[in-house]
Image (cartoon, rainbow, N blue to C red; front, side, top):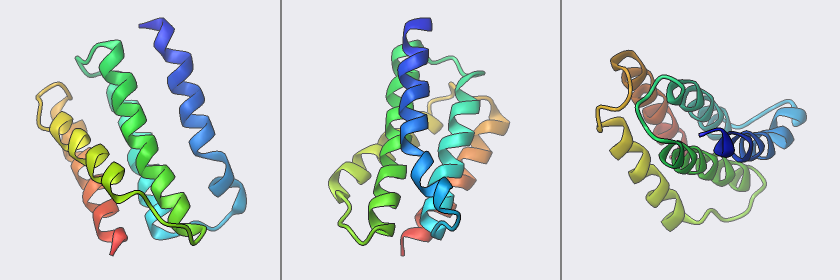
Amino acid sequence: MKKYFLPVLFATLLAAPLPLLAGSMTPMQTAAHQLQSDLNQALDQSTFNARQRYNLSQDAAELVKAADRRAQGRRMDRRELRKSAKELLKAFDSGSFQVGDVSMLNSDFNQFKKSIR
């Protein structure tokens, strides 16, 4: 479990700094970053193994990446975005998160989904 902690931390840090330093983020970026942050906190109390936690963190980082690309006026990889979103939703419904965390994550995801439009 400890060997996956640093890669997850670095992936999170690499995904976040540019938009955060820029000051103003789009609603999609804000929603993606909120989802990523809440997911990382919820994973600490989940029953997922280290590999699953890493994969879920990568899925959340993919949403952030897509939001950042869109904010820069570049195209998002919609196929990758859908795949990551599907994996996250499957994890939310798996019963491996605490009940309060699931409602928070679903709310964050719905906010992200609304911001795409």
